[in-house]
Amino acid sequence: MSQPAPQLSLAVGDRVVYPNQGVCRVFGVEAKEVAGQTLTFVSMRREEDGAVVMVPTTKIQSIGLRKVASSEEVARVFAFLKSESDKADLDWKQRARTNLDRMSQGGIHGLAEVVKGLQVLSELRPLPAKERELYDNARHLLVSEISASLSVPPCDAEDAIDVVLFPPGRERPKRTAEEFKQVAADDEGLDLGEDLLSLGSDLDLPSDEEAASGEEAAQADAEEGDEQAPARAGARGKRAHGDGKAAEERSHKAKRGGSAKPKPAKEASSSKSEAKKRGRPTKGKAVSEAAPARHARPSPSRAKTSGARKKK
Amino acid sequence: MIRLVTLEDYDPKDLDRLCRALYAAFGVGCEHSGKVKWPEDVGDPVDARKFLERVDSVRAYSDDKLLYVISKKLKDRELPPGTVPTQGWAKYGEDRAVITTYPVKNLEEGIKRVARGALHQLGHLWDLHHCLDPRCSMYPPWTPSFPNGDAIFCTFCRDKSEQKLRLAKS
Image (cartoon, rainbow over all chains, first blue to last red; front, side, top):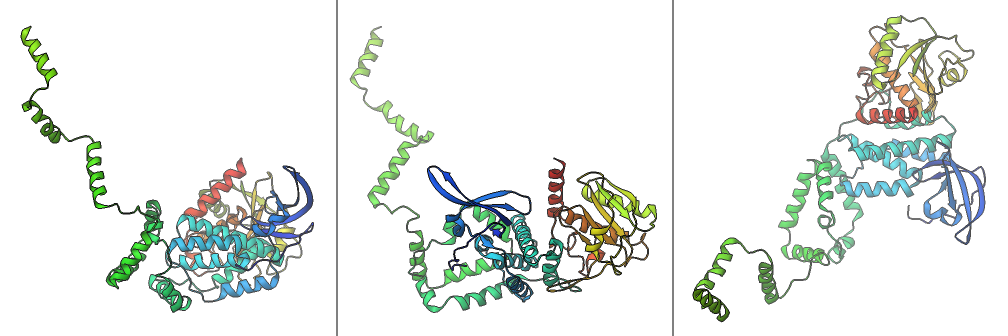
């Protein structure tokens, strides 16, 4: 996914895939003057609805425009869909990020990964609305690309995908959250070596809790439901009961940049009193402050006025 | 408008029941638009793709969807990953689909199953893909639980079909 794609040369009549849009057919390559600059544009028409897209040749690579997958690539996709993969990320934020990357830059294999991942996840619980939509979009793009690649009608392309995902005569298995946790734990064990784990404390990374805003956290709770709650609680508990110093250091580092510097004690106290003064005084305090003024010696001006009144 | 087209004789009551089920699912008028003759060279079992290419049309308006109901068996399709059992077939996003009543001997009893298959194929005509919900009619039709379900859509598929219908009307 991160490998730089070779420069794509397009000619009229080529079929290409525009990420997140679908299969398009190139109908023109022409130079145009835009804001005083002469740019070469590739004009293409989306096969689904005939919408016209014009892309400057300099942007082709960054957009992720690519040719329609070959039949070998499609065969590899079917093999991937057929494999007994139980990988599904239970962290919604991580999952959303990965899926978006796969949709825009992952090619046909990325689309298959999104479809397969969400399908596996749906065996645990119904997908939330946004992910259901993402699943439908990914499926639509995958179907149209396979249909274009194998030159079969879209219905056959979809059935070809689903005969692999839903083998005839077999119901989809019901999964439990434990299965996913097991897989995630195995993956973590494989991916993160000791070197990387030891680097963890040196990296100045913001914690997930801080990064997530209130809304996000609420959404996370809503989406994750009860499945992850025990896992999170367990993880937090482990952190809390783990080496206390390391945890303190970590939390201190995590807070760096996020919160303001601690003020000196004097300043802090003065600022506190200022803050109290600024605020509207409470009734009781106002009475106590005003009361001594009655007993206090009257000011000369006040005395004069009072005397004047007496004279009157 | 959904137009049912038959190639054999069916009990009008059964067809009426099927029309009502389709109307309830899509909220679009549905009627039996008559009988057409069998196209030539579609094989036996019937090749669904050839059948739809060669069969006569009864379309009246551009946004009409035609559903051909046949009693002969449809040929299973050979696709790169394997053989797909075929109870119906549709031209995705276009105007015509075919379903077979072949496995159902008594249509009066098996109307629920036929209606579910009809909903599935008509859903493809309105750009619906297969669904993950086993209760939805867009669930893959070769799964064991499919014939036992009701002729209904899940919330997502219903919303999507309604959206497509609104766009088609406008």
